[in-house]
Amino acid sequence: MSFAHLKDFPGRLALLAFALLCLGTAPVPAVAQADKAPAATDKDKDKPAPKPADDKAGLPPLPPEAHAQQSIQLDGKPLHYTVNVGALPVRDGDGKIAGNVVVTAYTVEGANRPVTFAFNGGPGASSVYLNFGAIGPKHLDAGNEGDSPSDPTNLIDNAGTWLDFTDLVFIDPVGTGFSRSLVPEADAKKLFYSTQPDIEYLSRIVYDWLVKNDRLSSRKYLVGESYGGFRGPRITHYLQSQLGVAMNGVVLVSPYLNPTIENDGDLSPLPWMMTLPSITAAHFEREKKLTPEAMADVIAYTQGEYATTLIKGHADEAATQKMIAKVTELTGLDPAFVKFSGGRIETGAYLREVHREEGKLGSVYDSNVTSFDPFPFAPEQRANDPLLASIVAPLTTAMVDFVTRTVGWKVDARYNALSYDVGRQWNRDEELRRGSVPDLREAVAADPKLRVMIVHGWNDLSCPFMGSVLTAEQMPLMGDPSRISVHEFPGGHMFYTRTDSRIALRKDVMDMYAKH
Image: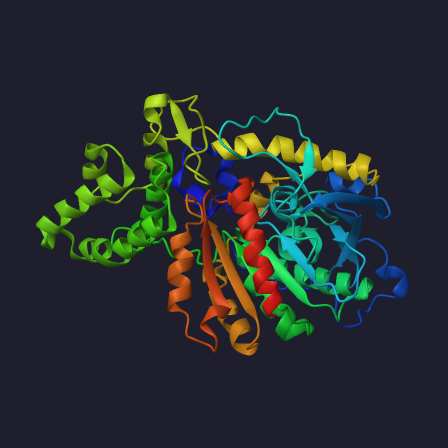
């Protein structure tokens, strides 16, 4: 998931660590894993970097790998698999261990099986969201309207899993899950919590896992959600161009591709074009009118009359009034609210307005997921996001129990499904603002067989689907135009919490994997 959207909620102090408001200084170049022989001796290389002055000095070591045999029922048949949990080292530029990345891998016996590497986002989110929410063999029902953080955390067989057609490797970046930095904070920012170093060490983790498990010759895929979708094209391009490992395909789930696409709403129509379709989709869903055909009309209106009317401004007052009436009809919002918004629906204001009569807030991840507003008279939203408030506890409980009890990886450490500390330390540098679309274009241009599927939930306002629609439409044609596709599903940022959407995603991905 991505937290860039939180710039819309300046009053939410608990989450400001994730807001992409402050621009950090560029990091000193660092190599997450040394590719050339360091000056240190082989004996020194296996030692952790010097102990920091903070509490990391007392951390107990992570345990050796552990594995368990499991099975699920999928399409009426048993699927037997092995789950393995363990840590891979990350080395600094001198070859000394600077951190540990914990990996959860699901493998099935069989020849010529593909392998898929999965990343979530934040930055600061572990891979548990994709694992137990979307594509792993087990699923936790959480993240939908009415779900409670204290609901039982019973894992069920996942009808939407990808495990029958690809092995799955879930990677937790440093600072998330049980993964950890072993260096002082200042060094961690340079090695782990800046845009390009993050891409480089995670790419090396993919490479190291492939080498360690004799899988370099396997067909290889990558799936990244939200900021993981930002990572996806960059890791793919870095692996392809720097480490000599080529992906067959990439799936970007609710990706954060263009960090600056919503800038300058005073002049550009783009910020309002991003959000109007998702706000409309949520309204259509409440009215039980949400269909692909209805949304095709909304997209056409957004790219056509809505955009041109915004560009004209007050030069065409009749067109403006017509646009305001149309936006009121599409969104179902109070006509006065739309009028005084000028037909430009700001996300934070909308999330407080849409369920105000019920005393509730909508989630930026899916505005039809709500919670009561504990500060209804405050000028700005002060409460946590409704979906985040309901999903972090059950996912954390389920993952810790699974790893320590089911798999038997007995770790003495805290699990971070969502690390606010990583968000606080993250360097919002120029590389972050550049986005990942240039890397996407280069990776696709270099490999005429590479396929990219971008998938979104209609209701998502944190990474709206319209941004990916415009991004894909503006890319030059490079051979088969179907190599880059955008798919939308009912739901929000984590649309896969809905069973039908999760199963539909599985089918679309299976079709893509079958092509290359």
